[in-house]
Image (cartoon, rainbow, N blue to C red; front, side):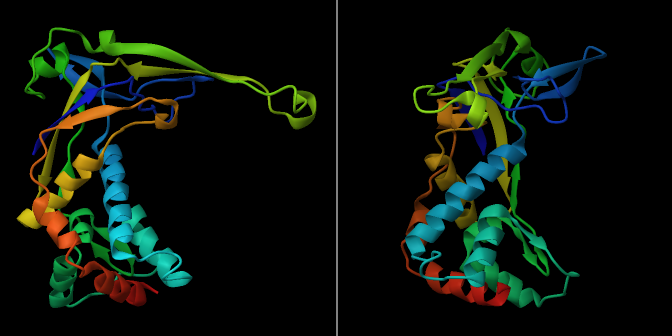
Length: 263
């Protein structure tokens, strides 16, 4: 599935492990072009995968009626953490019956797609998300994208500054410690196009899970609460098969059975 994201607002995706004070650089990936190493701003596939996981799993819980209120305590916490956050291993991995694994994948297609660490064993996901490369001169030259552009990647970067203001009529900054806090971040400019390859090695129903997540996706990157990261998504496939499954009424029983096992 070849997916394109068009920036309808500036996009920020921060660089990790680099201290620049109040300035946050855009994440860059190294490439080799004409025998020279260059750095190109791009968005990691893991970031997009995480956004899609949360969108799909939250919709799954909403449609099934399974929530903290209807499934209180430990069963809910462990179920939600596994599905929406990927879970973790808290003991040595145990061997499971392949029939159980196949049945679990069939009962919960979203879990099959994204996979999870189910506390005592790993269910591998069937989804692979590539890096979101900007359509720019460097990525076009290397054949990483299908679009065309002669603009260098660095020309697509601009700096945006935000300042947190305080209400001095209601609080004294010398007492509260809360003062104006300026930050500067690099962003990809509005209008930038990014391309990504997404593959699902499972069934057509599982591929429809991803398409449904892309249909729901409105923002990528960081600082979306400040208006950044708004995108238009194109290239996803038909999600009808998954929507029919979601409305079929079988998800609640499957989620409750899994919750009981995880608890």
